[in-house]
Image 1 (cartoon, rainbow, N blue to C red):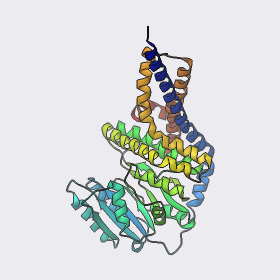
Image 2 (image 1 turned 180 degrees about the vertical axis):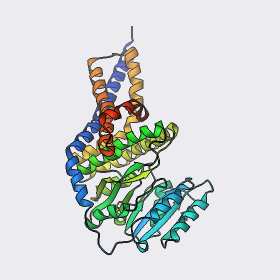
Image 3 (image 1 turned 90 degrees about the horizontal axis):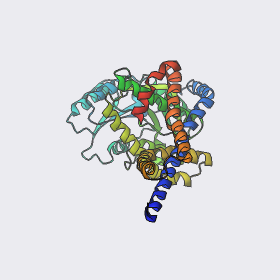
Image 4 (image 1 turned 120 degrees about the vertical axis):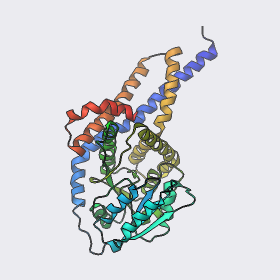
Length: 398
């Protein structure tokens, strides 16, 4: 027979378990919202995008800074530099910064990359820091202190922009003074390298081709992906600049900018291919950084979201988006409290079963539909052909 204190503790544990499931269900509703918004707005969104990409460019093109942050990535910086040199933009209006924070002694690669660009008449600098304070955000901020360029394109070292990247992204920027960021869709160079990269492509297409497009088309806050985008310098400054207090400096600054009234445009038909991690453990480490960074941004920005002048709808959607970073913590708490509840407490009640069913539909079935839709519209893959890799994709994303 259980003592009264023990019964009370088990009842409290049951409440904690149900609360975790309920919060998960609320956060998981964002998956359904994204899918509905994508399917609802896709036709109009693609038509608007086609119109935007046909906007004329003015004859006096502005100076654009291209920042290439790199950290121990070897010869990749030479490859991206070559692609930057091929951009269809007047070289006298182009400036490049190679922000080399490497610690592996591979500085020769950055120098070779700079020489390639200088030989084409492009203004190029290699910036190395003795103190890596702020990591990528710190490097980007220090680079901005050395330029007056009004527009800043950002490319990670493992991405290769096509020649029309700048022109496509600058068209809307030059026609809308309140547009603070134009972001292209990340694509992949090595998606067919092995099973891990093939599965990653399906997972990330759901984010880049479906989620980002849905947020942009429905007028919600759109997070920056950290690469393949062009910022208006005034937007970065107005938002408070790059800050290195989270692992997701890209999401952080995009929220701060949009809370200041700047708009973000996501172009799903403009793609920039890059490299995917080619091993499962590298992928998991990347996922850990993204998840931790998202949680840090949520802690930093949630109060600001609710103090802002955003509409109630945008506040709620932003809260669900930022709250996704809480999934990892809540999963652990739900697992422990659930095990105790099933072994010693109330067990499987109808409420518990109902919440578990809702949660499974939201966080397993709906993301699977994201991947189906992403493959259908981003790759032209028939839905039936994409089903075979969904179980492994679900396991890798868990």
